[in-house]
Length: 262
Image (cartoon, rainbow, N blue to C red):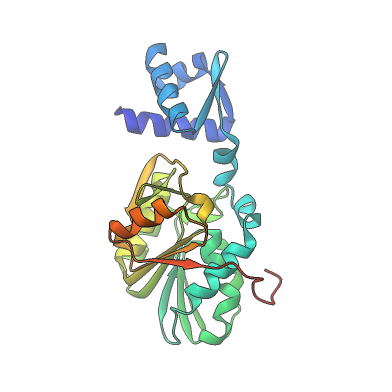
């Protein structure tokens, strides 16, 4: 098993169990104690795990980051501002892909005056929001349901979106390091990449707290998106690095949000 694949499997084990001894990990991964220690050292350097006596525990931010209910409660004013700007890119008659992120789901109240629309999504929150909506053609991407992400993933999801064509795809990410977006779960990345390939244009939106965070797997360089929306407050050197890499960056000022209780 390659090192990167092995470390992802180790992280996945910790996501379920929260902590583990070195002996548990040796048995689970079927590798030597030295290999487990090396992998834990590498993950600790990335601030993904914390080594404790005789084992390791998942860092709190990683433990909760994957949980949709937790993410939905975070940075609501920032998400509302990003959603309002994302909605300005949507025109009536479009087919729009929304990924599984709580940031993408926050656009729902802002699409009231953009109908008729076709909405394509693997996120259960968006499906529930639009399932009875007038003038919304809802295409739900199936697959394996992940209760932590509250969304559907896997081969069925990827194959379904590959047969569709959309005008715009809207994404978010859990981490931005350098000039690229990163995520922890490769299944989520594969679904997002399939969505991106199915759309004429793509936008990625995230609040500034995601910048500088670590995650294990590359999603995509930010320059590959047609628009990159970030809430204001980026350090000047980060903004310069992004713009220098050809990222089409737009800073968004957080406001009070829509009058819909979001």
